[in-house]
Length: 73
Image (tube, rainbow, N blue to C red):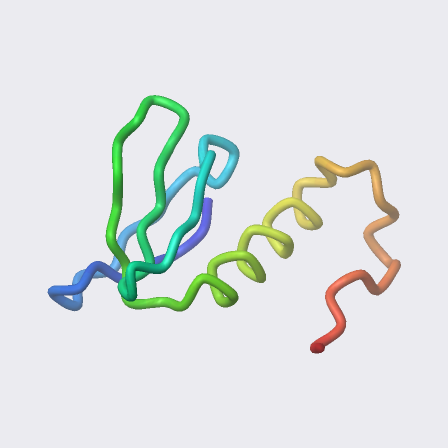
């Protein structure tokens, strides 16, 4: 799960495995595989970084947990 913030300031957890599309309209809109949409305060880049960290933590990409894959660009 990744921690995100709705536009009204309330935080919530979202299962990143169900994210299908992330867009900026300019607000960041996340569309899940079931077509539900969430608009969040975080930027598209922040959401992508949170997803990468989450995938790394649960080892979904079969990467070694001690490898560094999340360098700042």
